[in-house]
Length: 339
Image (cartoon, rainbow, N blue to C red; front, top):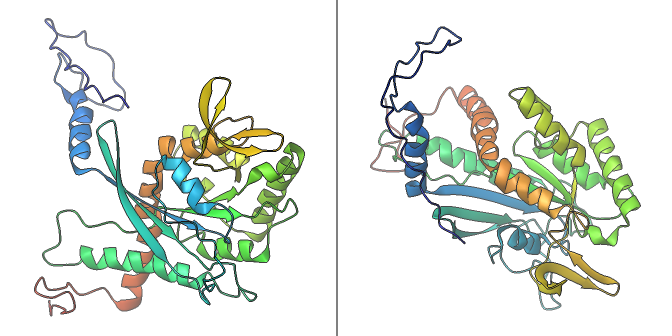
């Protein structure tokens, strides 16, 4: 991977720039000031502090959740496969397990935390099996809120809030399970849910298209929400870009961490009896669309929606229900101040 080359500093013009008309009542600059360097200043500061990104994966065992996350970030960032061996007992309730890694590309460091939910949907009776997940999401909001109201709070509050939830839909080709609908109905307003159809190579192109349309229709009818919601579009450009994404969802994906030789090139793929399914080939699956959406175009927006919408909703309700949180003394995490 090539290093990021810092852009050259723009030289000061020898003569004043020609005044240009400005809208909104702003003053016209008569020469170069250097306001445009703020972007570079922000870039340098952000590269020093790094980024946090927390992604949760939810779905039945055997849908390739860990493999897909490893494929997305091209490293072993997820825990081992959550499939159960003969010697292991399937947990009676949903467990929450997380693992964190610092990954670096082009001088940019990101602390990636992957939260897995083994046991979800694996029981005979899956009633209310989303409750431990909802509890975990709210606990992270609560943890952040308590840090905010500390008298001597940290300069940078550790962010363990779930920025994105990848929800894996089984490739049945028929319709959503009731569990899928209930999960998205209950958690769609608490976290950014991105639905994906797992192991999409088990569907023919026609089956895949029909299944995607049926899933979108069922979610619309039941009122289940997924990211990006139309109400969060900030302008017409956002609406145009997000409309294209919404028409593509749910992403039909294939994950693999194995490489094969195809036409003289090494590619990630799954080997089948009739050929190799190339993970990053848009003609084979929509993995590249998911990756570009999740990492290259909407990662920052996922974090901002988490903070400005989901966390603020929790914060307002929490403070309203309890008449406000008292500041927490710096001498003890449990001792409340009388202020």
